[in-house]
Length: 164
Image 1 (cartoon, rainbow, N blue to C red):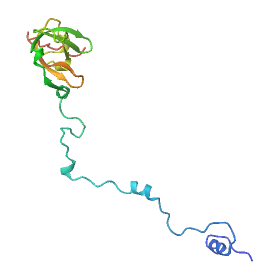
Image 2 (cartoon, rainbow, N blue to C red; image 1 turned 180 degrees about the vertical axis):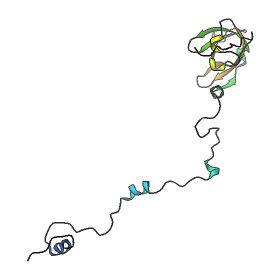
Image 3 (cartoon, rainbow, N blue to C red; image 1 turned 30 degrees about the vertical axis):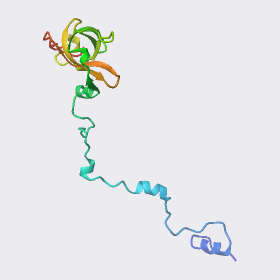
């Protein structure tokens, strides 16, 4: 007895025990649950009220302020022992310098500053010996004193100094 071989007859062959071909699967194949759940739907959307953040950041990820204000955030507690008036003592090419307070060094150190703390002058226009006023605060990231809001007393505005 010879049977026809084809898709319809394979089920019959299997029932009779002949042939090694598997029966066609008439049901659609189902994916494993772990794979389908992650791709099937996205998480529920937040309401408008929930999605608003408390920060000042815009859509571009920036907060709309310039870097100076951001730098001031890490500067905290005022340090009155450093005074408010001093003389530029040292300038480094990297944009940092040191101010010697009129009251003298504190713990045998001058007061550190970064060029971003300058208010009425560019760093390139500074000279050793320039008199300035400042606010001495604790730089919380380094745990050291730093000057901010530095204003040159001699009115040197550094007209057009900028970058070289």
